[in-house]
Image (tube, rainbow, N blue to C red; front, top):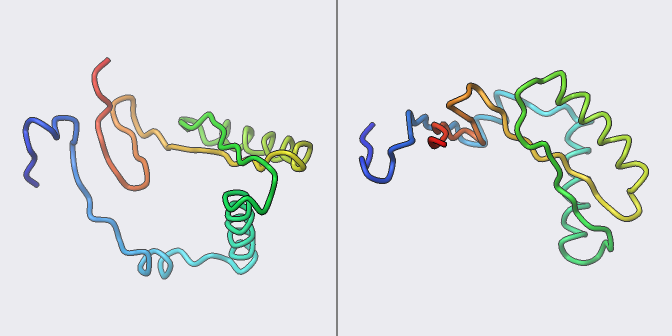
Length: 115
């Protein structure tokens, strides 16, 4: 892989991502989850179109270092969402951290810039 030495100084590697079709074949979604994803997207669409008066709140922590803690946070967020569902639609933002110097966001591998 060739990099522009001026603009791509923080990029360590590049990986071609599989197509959405290949991903769907490799990781099929269970029918129950398919309905959940569809309904979630419909709710977001209704909020963004102004047909649903609730506010869409995308909340963090967005950086996940510990899967156990992330699951605990997600459970607590789900419980909270039941209490505020009439005003807010809560969505958990997330990024998976691999090391102190690298992060992976939707298939992009990049070294964190120096502090």
